[in-house]
Length: 287
Image (cartoon, rainbow, N blue to C red; front, side):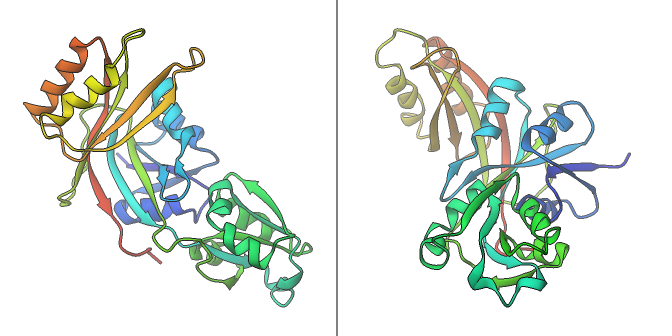
């Protein structure tokens, strides 16, 4: 059976970089949005899905989180951390007129990651959001009559025949994005030699009970379980109602983490495990 991997497309997004770093021989299927990709996994159209979860500068990708929380809790079976290097690119017809660029197209996160560049170089250029960085490159390639630019990666410049006019324009050199690998069935695992692992939970607190969040944290603290992230998200049931996403920097075990879960449930908390999975860090982008 052919293994297929869905990802946020079109071709040449940073998500495809993440896919190429792990899945070498599988068929890659681009989707127009994160929702479309996750739906494809849920409906069995693809074997795996790869979508962005968090960026160093812009924080969590709430579309991904809300889908896993409220739509369908698809199991996370892996995480890929990719360095993000943004390039300004134009159609070859306009490469000698970059000073007169009237608009720049890209994903909202990419635009936000290059604020300082815009403030100093193109303060008057209109910033237009697209579904992905690659979609921005594709738009610029299809409109050579307009003196516009895209922010995307080097692979997008090659894919759509654009000319890079400014390299590494992101505000911070340490910019990275976390991508998660999703599967439709629990129990699926990813074969890798990485020593790094993570476990992710959704925790809901009992209502009208003071100090519960402190007790939740204490359940992990006295067991010396390190939390790498705790983030609140609206439950969408009313103002002030929140749940929490908790990341632990270790794989699921048979004693400590199950013991913490039992303690949380005894407090009246709801606990859902989104996955216990390996974390793969990519040192350089794959050309």
